[in-house]
Length: 156
Image (tube, rainbow, N blue to C red):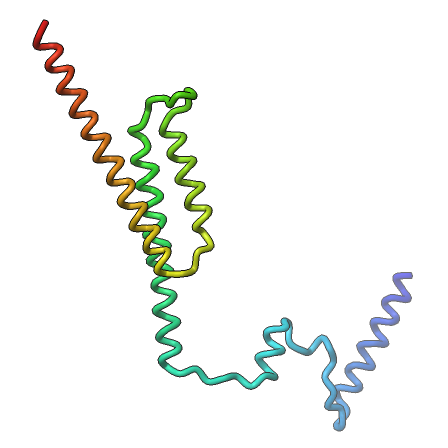
């Protein structure tokens, strides 16, 4: 079987080399063509020239997407950092830290495929305000707790 295969390979290569060396041979074989469909289309389709305005617009859109992604990641990390301070359990016995992290993850996953820059900006602003509000309330409650302990300790 192997000898037959070698025989066919030898016959094919000799025919291929003979045909390639012929003067009138101008036909391309399949394996000499483009490697991918994109290469084939690039080679044979007429491309529309892009204006500078379109290119600049695309660059700006890429920058906007990159900056909003960066902002979203920054907000998500800030949420995770802020949840470290919520160490008491809720009515079910689950730590508030875990509940808040779970909800944040769910909201980010729901908004993941949002493409409208205005909506993305609104979500980022709303998320940032929610984190700041939660931290401010936590700080205020901590201050009240410290004052209550001071007053209780001073009366004894």
